[in-house]
Image (cartoon, rainbow, N blue to C red; front, side, top):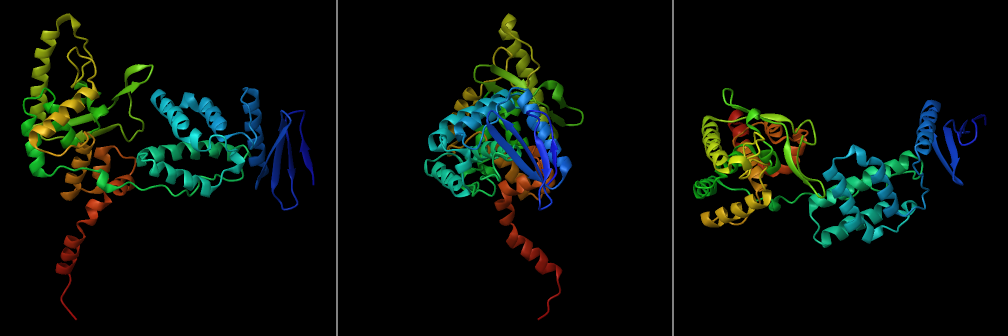
Length: 375
């Protein structure tokens, strides 16, 4: 068994009897080690560990409580996250993970324990999307523990996550859409509601839309940014989280005319505001030109629903309405995925596959008519 020794605190690499390569290093009285198939991989891991030590990052052993480990992990990765995302992760760790097994040592985490945790969250009526975000936090953090040899495997791998319930989506039918838009006709946010139904854009994307993003000749809207509120930081306009969120959406003549009317109405609003107006080129600003307030929009949205005699839904359900209309009218999933800004068509299918399954009877009839009758 030959050893490739280095100086103090530089670690050791040696070949084991089974042919694998083991890298190990001691730090603060603890020994960290990990096995690799290739010596080059072992050497790379050792360099990464030494870099962590050099930057003053504490390497915790497997006995560290999960809550402490997560906060340390978040501190190390905060610069790579958006401020709002980092704030959300911090809140979820403190509110949900810490109370359940924040004091559990990471070496004592098990897949069964993780499954029980997710089940407990569901029983406490934590939203399915929130549970998925919590899983993402745990999975990413514990992957780091595996990377540094603190765990041999990630206990969140293959966890039994709850699936999205389609009954959570409330979709307006054609008659309800007509009633809603009719009731919203006098609203100063009429164009925003119309565009939300037509394009499926998120509220943040609509409130971040600028006139420079709209090409009236080609009928294309370029989604470039979204309004975001970060606690302690205030309101900002930021780029979409992923490159898929930056997209172009084709709209029709009616939508373009409604946007032209919105532009005319804004000119009057700007005149009324006078010196209070802060020009940001926004399509849907507030009364002084700054990004609109989602809370005010939701309040009016609920009032319009009541006026139209439509059961209460979320503004986000306009996005589900748009997706359902597209798919019910045979628009290819890959096109719908692009319009909605999903990372891939499979995401669209996961969310709206039930819409396509409703078409199976019709699909069966189409195939029946294509084949010759013979028994």
